[in-house]
Length: 201
Ligand code: GSH
Image (cartoon, rainbow, N blue to C red; front, side, top):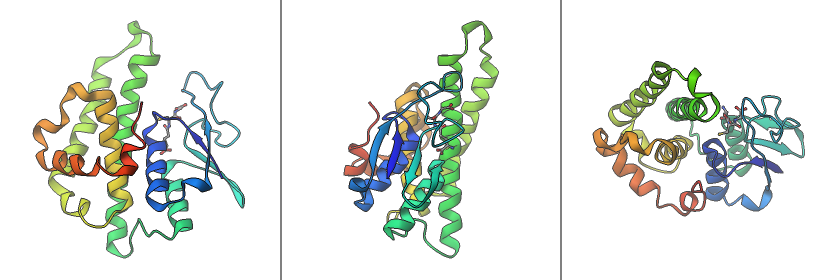
């Protein structure tokens, strides 16, 4: 399989952490790609018409894209049961959606200052994106901590990758200040070899 990959993409990191954790790294060849909404020259358009990483070419069907689809596929292939069953499945999917929503808002903030000319930037929009991150982090702290402990699952991987990205791009916002439980949890999770091996650089 070929994984369209960028070392700083937190969505790619979800896939990479899963590959490390399930021992499937050697089944995937990494292909370096990175586009943006205003430059698709090096985007993986052949695999994903949306031009985004990650995308996964596989031997037995069309390329898969969106980290959620790819992670679900690889979990199925590995038989690793990272999504659980019964009511736990809905918890894991909701936690993953929360983490991905943090990433979506955090990435839009980065695009705003990196891609948009200064005279067109709109601070209330940026702060509105951060408000989404803020609320989602509060919800993890107050509602989901019990689900984040226990055997490894995809919700944990997604949250850890989201927090890693907030540290990487929005460290100055100080997300830990009001979320001691989430901060402790992440401090432990970040020590996993899969997280250390996939740190954005
Ligand atoms: N929902 C997608 C997923 O979960 O895979 C988001 C993927 C995504 O936004 N990737 C970024 C990208 O390739 C890199 S971090 N952006 C290029 C673009 O938006 O054109």
